Length: 268
Image (cartoon, rainbow, N blue to C red):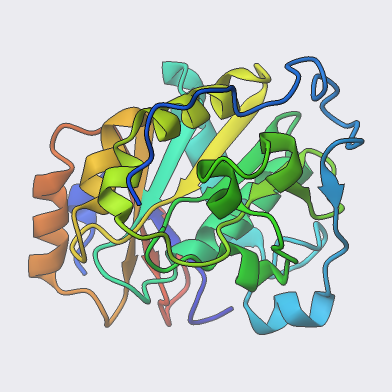
């Protein structure tokens, strides 16, 4: 993971580097069905392929991996900031595609599930380029596409990849009119239901890149805080400055320098 381990910057300025209408029914069939945090009777349990995960740089699946040290450090810093402020929803974005935000989001969620007493729920909100499900190798006959289309209940689209305290809400394929969908009442309701189901849950949302469309800017106000992933040798200083401008009113808890050759460093 020498080119893909992150360095976290708690002080970001040190980084040099079809519209969905209001739902007519709730998204959950029965609010009491999912009350057991570790009882996945309603949630599908899907075993993951370790070789597939390794090819996609998912190193936190194995809690004893010696390659996940940088991710674990990031987890500690992120959770400290969130706990200090009472935050429970974290958005992860990047300036442009190919910065590694999805891989980082998956590894961070797994690290939280492995090493803390919190549950981690990862949702793929990159509706133009969804990758969470494919990176994990999940079957996606029912996904966020069906949920937002009113063709599935929430418990039918959630997946537990055999890790206790870890649940994924994948998106199978691009969703048309993504900006309108992300700004819809149905998405607002979904975020609330995911956040409020368990008090110990940390909800992570993999958002689209900030500078590729207005999708991320549209939905950012719905989340407590945001983490910016910057790719070494990919994102320019101008792109980072543009992101900081767009994030001026957001609770930006830090920036991650990804794909760095050097040993990851934490900036405070």
